[in-house]
Length: 258
Image (cartoon, rainbow, N blue to C red; front, top):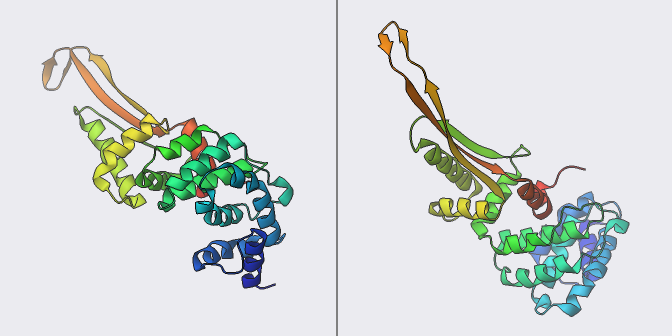
């Protein structure tokens, strides 16, 4: 069975007809290559699992087609018996909020990945609060989290310690701005606001402080010197446990290998 027929059969199983926009063909082609059970079977299971939303949520028709294809693509490698209806306290609010993000691809993908996670019987990382978290993100902040998800560390962080007053904060701000630049944000001058918001949402933990150390008087080759106090400022920005769960549940590339 060729790829084109696989995709057409999947569209029929989703109840979306024979005509498939090119964007959906591109979305499902990788899934066709990796699925062994038949993409149409997976699509049918997705349709059944999504059915309760169609009757219960206003505006679902606006995003049904895109969401159906996206979730099918994400779940393509799952066994059908492992696909379940998402808890309605996640799926209901998610679809409502997705309607308002229909023109923001980075936010849309967070919602779709969260729904797919909630439909995966083997994955328990989805949490109802994640819907609200996505709602409070800008598209640029979604790009930043997608970038962080690709960092090969469990707890990505930025840190600095220095004896120069104010330098630690400036350094961490600068390093975060570099993350933003590498993530491809549209408004790089908003990096400080983005960092503040991700801290507010408990995606990141922010620690600032200083260590003062008493230095007793002594003597060296330059002569006697008196007692003094040295001060070291430090600042840390680190992904929280909550943030790690959010990335695992809401960003496809952030999911751990199983």
